[in-house]
Image (cartoon, rainbow, N blue to C red):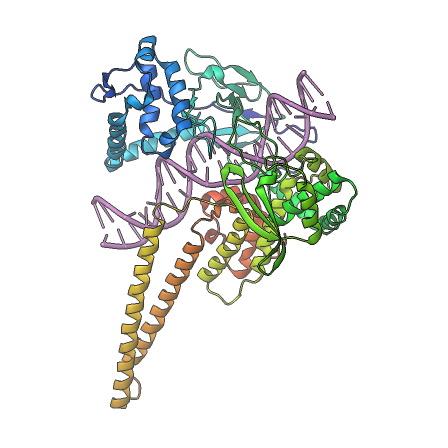
Amino acid sequence: WEEERSTDGSKWRFLEHKGPVFAPPYEPLPDKVKFYYDKLMKLSAPAEEVATFFGKMLDHEYTTKDIFRKNFFKDWRKEMTSEEKSKITDLNKCNFSDMNEYFKTQSEARKQMSKQEKQKIKEENERLLQEYGFCIMDNHKERIGNFRIEPPGLFRGRGDHPKMGMLKRRIRPEDIIINCSDSKHPKPPQGTKWKEVRHDNKVTWLASWTENIQGSIKYIMLNPSSRIKGEKDWQKYETARRLKKCVDRIRNQYREDWKSKEMRIRQRAVALYFIDKLALRAGNEKEEGETADTVGCCSLRVEHIKLYPKMDDQEYVVEFDFLGKDSIRYYNKIPVEKRVFKNLQLFLENKQPEDDLFDRLNTSILNKHLQELMDGLTAKVFRTYNASITLQQQLKELSCDDSIPAKILSYNRANRAVAILCNHQRAPPKTFEKSMQNLQTKIDEKQNQLSTAKKQLKAAKADHKASHDEKSKTLEVKRKAVQRIEEQLMKLQVQATDREENKQIALGTSKLNYLDPRISVACKKWSVPIEKIYNKTQREKFAWAIDMAEKDYEF
DNA sequence: TCTTTGACTTAGAAATATTTTC
DNA sequence: GAAAATATTTCTAAGTCAAAGA
């Protein structure tokens, strides 16, 4: 990257691209695929298309949920002809199972395609990528992140989303705003027009459209490997490193503020303590009824915490139980300092469960305060800082004389500590139990092998003694075999532990978004090659860090 | 000042590709 | 060489936060 970008807020000087790739048009079902409403019924193409969205999802839990069904049916009816509308009045009487069968057969057929057919599809995708997947920004050819427009379908919100099942409409060129240099712009598909072509170099997106579920804007932007994303990422970690330099001061400050005579300052200070200690998100307020009911720090309600003056052998315990981003549950019991506890009791006085815990605070107030404490400081910087510093500390304990696989395991453990801190969870993989069993079987087999090998070694020893040979080759061989099997067994056991501990924890998010990649690059000081830590895509995203960091790098 | 909008990062699930196992 | 297991990539929803608008 060239040094020193402009100071006037412009993000680029030149931008040229081919525009987005649209979803393929709807292909009507073959006549053999039936839809029944009591009896056989042939749907109009628009109604049929929306029906297929539902038919494809029949095995999904979504289609059993009342809200999903209600929203879907309402939007589906909008696509029906008046005749269809008058006939189809009850979703429960609709039979999509033939459609569902058909799509299953189709996807099975796709799997069974010959090598050449698969190759052909691959080549076609590659051609599309080459044509639409790149742009020129300033002097570089850059990979675009999402050059395909989202196809129409049924909205799948996370958690208890009031809009789940609504129809996500098809996006046409007339919906798209193109952003590029004013020299030349992409052509819209034959016979269509763009909504607008603009030339705004204060933003980084190439195209945008307004989505119909929430009315929010969606963007086409560059891949994480691009200069514009990389520089921003680097900047993010530099801000977190600046926090490292003044975090002690800030911590002392908020501890002082716990004693403030002003309620809003106490609330701010307690909230900041949670953000720092527990890595909670800021918690913007959300429009009620438009989204799932989730919260972050500033939007915590009385019902989300419980106070225990004494719990087992601990004092001043706070129990958190709430749904955070993506409706992932945050559950934690944590002893806090007496002052924090007393403040919380005060905040709870005379409130109902559904009242805000921090009624004098919001993210805007909090971030304005943080900005005064350090330039560029916001609530999310604490997550970045605490994640990265945790990784670095955990890695310090890495032992020099471990093997590479053992070091990788330790790295994963450190990564896991961060993921736990940030509450990055996943649904246990569907095949988890099975795969655990398989691994256990392998371990058992290996143990049997080991005992056999040990017996053989013993026998060889006895032979050796009896024969009084100078040296016995078999003895050595058997000894080696035992050693080898022991190692293999160890490896399997380690793998089992690692997998078990990872059951419900997602490592990817922290690896990609919270851990300063230069810390990982510096693992070369333990002769851990970067390829063992990052796969190809990750190395592309973190190219800047791989270039920059030496083994003495300190976060 | 308060609310809304816009731009961007962060998130887990699902789809797809690759590797391993039988 | 197929099927199963695992790793990677894609997808798009759901956050954060500053700036614009009322």
